[in-house]
Image (cartoon, rainbow, N blue to C red; front, side, top):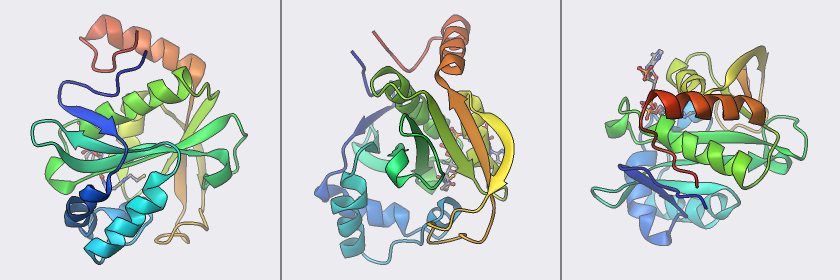
Length: 195
Ligand SMILES: CC(C)(COP(=O)(O)OP(=O)(O)OC[C@H]1O[C@@H](n2cnc3c(N)ncnc32)[C@H](O)[C@@H]1OP(=O)(O)O)[C@@H](O)C(=O)NCCC(=O)NCCS
C-alpha cells in the first residue's frame, strides 16, 4: 500500500476550490516559463486548467499540510501525452513548486513519491524528465531523486514557452530506483513510505 504523503506534504487530486490558490502561485512569471507554460492570467483560467490538464492521469496537487494549501503540482505524463518519443511502458515526470517554498527540498520529496508510484503501482520500466539548462535547480531535483543525465538535448515543439530552446534529457530506470531506495533507507529516515 502506498502513502502519498510525508511529514510535510501530501499529494492529492486537484480540486476546483484550489483555483484561487493556483492562480496566486501560477501567475508568478518566474514559475511557468521555466517549465514551458505561460503564467496564468486569471482565476478563471486556473479553474479551466484544473478542469482539463490537471484532471488528467497522474497529476497531483502538492499540499503543504500545515496550511492545507496547494503549493505546487507534480506528476507524470504517459507516453501518449509525453513531450518525448517514449515507449508505452514509460512516462515523463513534471513538477513545479510555488516560489515562496523553493529551496526547502519540497519538490524532491514530492517527486520521490511520484517515482515510487510510477514504478511500484503503474509498473513503468523507465521514467524520463527534461529541463532547460538555464534552470539547473530542476536538473538538481531529478539528480537528487536518482535520475541520470543522458547527455542528450532536444527541443519539445509541444511546449507553449521555450519550444525553440533545447531541453536536457534525464532518465531513471526501475532497477536504478531500487538501488536508490536501498541507499536512502540505510542513510536516513525516509520520507517516502512504501509497505
Ligand atoms: C525547480 C523547482 C521545481 C525546484 O523546487 P524546490 O522545491 O525548490 O526543489 P528542492 O528544494 O527539492 O531542490 C532544489 C535543488 O536545486 C538547487 N538549486 C537551486 N538553484 C540552483 C541553481 N541556480 N543551480 C544549481 N542548483 C540549484 C538547490 O540548492 C537544491 O539542491 P540541494 O538540495 O542539493 O541544495 C522550483 O524551483 C520550480 O518550481 N521552478 C519553476 C518551475 C520549474 O522549473 N519546473 C520544472 C520544469 S522542468
